[in-house]
Image (cartoon, one colour):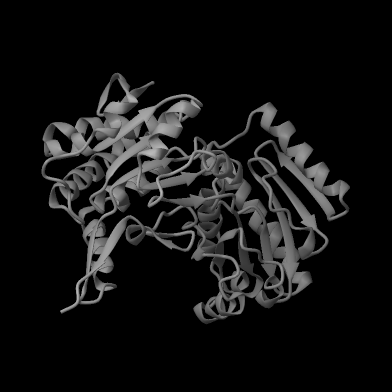
Length: 407
C-alpha cells in the first residue's frame, strides 16, 4: 500500500512509513518551532500576488499569523487549572472534504500547534487553491526546523479502503469532515480502543436581515452588506457548511418586500462586478432544485435573474430547505421577529449570519435556542472566517491530552 506525498513533496511512499513517522525530540503544545513555521506560511499566503489569484487564502493567512497562534495557545492555557497540564494527543489523521479546498489547513494547523504528529489526506479532487497552499507549505520547509517535515505529512490517494483502514488503526484521533455519508463511511474503519473520532457532518446555515436595521443603514452600509453576503455565499459555490442558503427577513411584511428587492438588486450588482457566474450544467441544477421545492408547495414566487442568481419567496418558515439548491439560489422568508425561528432550528444548523440587529437581540436568540442548534452567530461577511471554536468544538483543546497533577 502506497500513497503520494504532497507535503513534504515527493513520490509514492508505503503507508507503513507514514505510521513510523515521529521525532526523537517531539513537539510540545505551542512549540516555537511550529509557531515559526506557521507564521512564515502566513506571510507567504498574504503575498498580494497569491491573494489576487486565490482570495480565500488571505483569510487563511490571517488565521495563521503569529499573534493569532500565540493567542490561541494562551487561551487554551487560560482554561486550565493550576493542576492541569496539556500535552499533544499523538498521531492525528485528518480526512477533509474536497469541495472546500482550504479547510484541511485550518484543521491541520491547530493540531500541529498542539504538537501532534499529523497525517492529512488531500483529496485527488481538490482544486487549485489546495495546490497553491501545498506549494507554500513546501516552500517554507527550507527555513523550517527539520522536525516539521518529520512530523507533518500530507498525502493523496484514491478511495482505497485498505489505506484508510491502516491509517485509522494507527491514529489517536481521526478528524472527519465532509458530511454524514463521509462520516458513516469512515466509521466503518475501526480505531484503536483509546482513539476517538472528531466529526463534522452535514450542516446547514442561514442569514437573518433586520428590516428596520436595513432601513436605518446608510446606502454605503447596505452596499457593504450585499458584498459581505456575496462573499459568504459565492465562495465554494454556496456548498460550504457555513454558506447561507436561506435569508430570513425579520420585520413587517410590506417593508420586507422593499428590502428584499433592494438587497437582491445590490447582490446582483456585486456578483456581476466580481465576475461570478455558473455554467450551464449548474444553471440546470438550480432550476431542478427550485422547481422541486416549488412542487412541494412552499414557494410563492421564484425569479431566475440570470444563471448566477435565483431568488425564491417562500410561503412560511417550515418550507425552508436545508439542502443545497445550487450555487446562487436564495430562498427568502419573512418573519415578524427572531423568536419565530426558535422552533425551526435543528441540531444540524451551524451558522447564522446577521445584519442590522442589536447584539442583545442575538444573545437572546442564542439563549432561547439553548444549544439545540446554531453554533455560530456572526455578521455578514464572517460566515467562512474560520475560528478555533468551530461547530461547537474548541479545536485546540480537542487536539491535546490533559494530565492532572495533585500535591
